Amino acid sequence: MTGHAIVVGGGIGGLATALALHRIGWRATVLERAPELGEVGAGMSQAPNALRALAELGVEAEARAVGVPTYSTSNLRRPDGRYLKRAEPGEGTALLGFHRADLHGVLLDAVPAGWVHTGAEVTDVRADGDGVTVTAGGADHRADLVIGADGIHSAVRTSLWPDAEPPRYLGRTAWLGVADVAGMPGDLTGSVTLGRGALLLIHPVARGRAYWALLTAEPTAGVRYDDEKAAALERVGDWHEPVPQLIRATPDRAVLRTDIRELPPLRTYVRGRVALLGDAAHAMTPDRGQGAGHTLEDAVVLAHALSAETTVEAALARYDAERRPRDQATARGARIDGAMTSSRLGQPAMAALIRLMPATLWRKGVAPDGNPTWRWAPPRLPAVPPVS
Image (tube, rainbow, N blue to C red):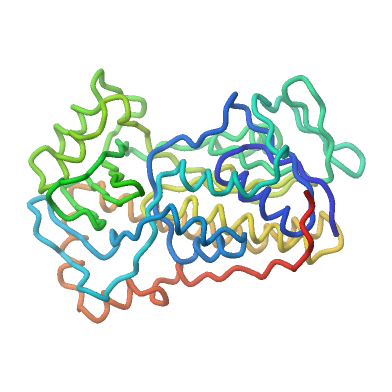
C-alpha cells in the first residue's frame, strides 16, 4: 500500500515521520505553522533504542556525525561533587548528546525538497470520503492520512479528541542552556547531579559546547523572573564545578525556561484516518530522556504498519496497539522518577538507594541490554524505491 499523507508539525517528530513515509514509497506534505523551520530548545540525548530508529530511517551515520558521546546516566553526583556512581573506563553506555537543532537539521536534509511548507497553521481537519482534508494557511490539502505531530499543545488533538484531558502541570520547572566549554574545568563527559529537590543534567554537544538542564520543584505554573539565568544560578551557585561555570557561560538570552507538563494517557492515538504521534500523543517528563526517542520509534512503527497492512484503517489500528502501551508505560515511569527527584524527602532516599546498589547490579542497569527501554528494536522497513 502506498499513498499520500499530511504531517502536521515540522519538528523532529514530523520530519522523522515524513522520512519514514518516504522510505516506504509514500508521499508526504509537512505543514509547519512557524514562518521558518527551526527546532526550539537546547539539547537532548538519544539512547540505543532511538539510535536504532535513526538507523532504520537511514540517517544513523549523519546523526552520529553531529552527536557527542555522553555518560550522564553512568555518572551520578552529589552537589558537593562526590560521585554516587561513576563510570570506569569501558563501563556504562554512551548515549549521544545533541543540540536539538543539529538533529533536526539531519532529518530535514533527508526529507525530499518541497515536502515541507512553513507558515501553514492548521485550522481545520475533516474526514472527506476515503481521505482527510486539512485547511492550513487558507488552503485545503487532501490526503489519504493525516498525522498530528504538532507537539504537546497539538491542534489536531484538540480538534479531533475533544474528550482528551489537557496537558497537566506536574509541580516542576526547568531552566535549560548551552554554553561554550573550551578550557572549562570539571567533568564534562556527561553527568547527573542530585540535590535536595533538584536535579542538574549535563550533556556534551557538538562544537565544543555542553547542554545543561536544571529541574526543580515549583508548586505554581507560570512563575517567571526578570533574570532567569540569575534565578537558576541562585539555586545551584554553590554546587560542584562545572555547574555554576556552565550557567555563567551561557548567554543571558539563551537561558530557556519551561514548566514540566505531561499529557494524560489517551485511550487511542487514532480517529478514523487521523493518527497522533510524539508529544501530541504522549508528551512525557524528561526524567528518562525518552520523549524524542519514543517519537522516533513512533515514526518507524507507523511507517512499517502502513507498509504491512492493506488498508489505512488496519495500519493505524496496528500502530495504536503497538505504540500506545509502550509509550504510556515509559511516560508513567518518567513521572514516578521525576516525583522522586523533585521531592525533598524522596531525593535523599533515591541517592541512598543508588549509593547502596551493588556494583554488578548498577553495571547491568547501565548496559545497553540491561535497560528494558533501551532494548527496543525497530521493525525493518521494506526496501521500496522512495518517491521524490
